[in-house]
Amino acid sequence: MTQLLENTTEFASSAVRGTWVVIAAYNEGEAIGGVVSDLVDDYPNVVVVDDGSGDDTADAAAGAGAVVLRHVINRGQGAALQTGITYALTRGAAYIVTFDADGQHQKSDLPALIGPLARGEVDICLGSRFLEHAGSVPLARRLLLSLAVLFTRLTSGVRLTDAHNGLRAFSRRAAARIDIRLDRMAHASELIDQIRQSGLPYREIPVHIRYTDYSLAKGQRGSAAFRVALDYLIGRVMR
Amino acid sequence: MNLFQILAVAAVLLLSTWTVRTAFRGQMRKRIALFWLLVWLGSGTTIVWPRATVVVANRLGIGRGADLVLYVSVVVTMAGFFYVYTRFRRMDTQLTQLVRALAIQNARKPEPSDTPKQPSAH
Ligand SMILES: Nc1nc2c(ncn2[C@@H]2O[C@H](COP(=O)(O)OP(=O)(O)O)[C@@H](O)[C@H]2O)c(=O)[nH]1
Ligand SMILES: [Mg+2]
Image (cartoon, rainbow over all chains, first blue to last red; front, side, top):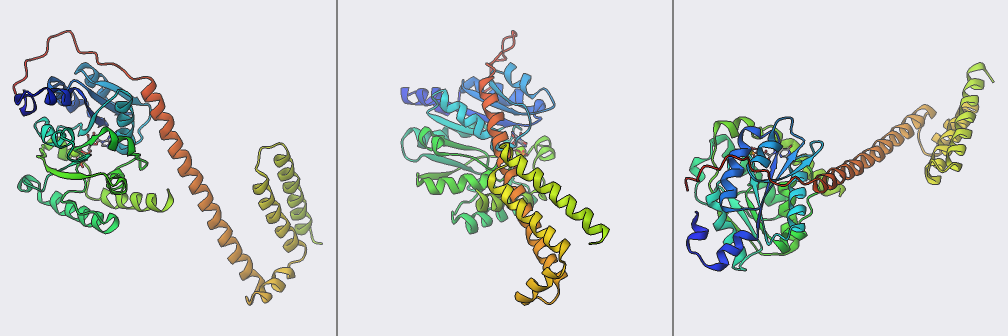
């Protein structure tokens, strides 16, 4: 098992038992089974929100050992994450981790994200692919993401090295204050605003993102960034 | 009155009675109904007495009556778009809430397949 259990304090295993991993998935039937079965080996509480997929995402996730919540129609990643978070809270989660469905995130990064929460140091840990492993990020991605970081600094006034990383961990108290209203991809910026407004302490943690051909082919196009930025700005004005 | 005026006034009267009836049946909010009645009243006035627009336009410092009509309709159309847009956004939010409630209500518990899992390689 992973590091978290290696220093087998009771504290560590109770942190694992109190952790819910939330995965938003849209047409990830190809990848989701492997992602879930890898996770449940160490983290028994995994909830996959199948966001109206047209493929076998739900069956693959349930077969691999996840609780599956199904959006009958596609509502976007932000909406799906909020559904998973709300559900995890009703199940008594002490810590909530958001994790991508496409295999880009590593289970081995979780102890570093949950640890500071379990030790009561901060309430939110945000994964960053630029604190240590920046070299592995494709160049085009890196440029786009540094624009996103700049955008976040300008609109939210928060200094982060990676504003759009889907790998995050929240304490129960932080998760309860999160209220994602931007249904699609702009939720990442919205989340950062809410974290700042909550006044709860957060920290960036270096994580490793795996850029497989599968995830790059399926992932967000650079051109989508304008739509995301617009969604976010409208969301700020309109409430 | 020419034929166009007669037909147009008839249409406006019909729309007004329809608006009032809908409001009294509780199918339209009173405020919205009032808005439409004002629109119909304005249309009726300018149909019967086109020079009214010129009079009002001149008061406002706009030269031609047709310009006034254009400005007013642009503003009203924009306001209409804005109203529909906010309604749309609200419905969108409500739709998400509905989809979310359904999803949580019908949570599907894990169904690990019968075949024992491969021991993990970690
Ligand atoms: N629920 C939901 N999840 C989505 C949607 N689009 C993408 N995702 C998930 O969000 C995660 C990240 O999306 P991805 O497109 O890979 O973004 P990228 O990694 O930033 O390029 C993956 O786990 C996707 O399955 C959607 O419409 N709804
Ligand atoms: Mg991806």
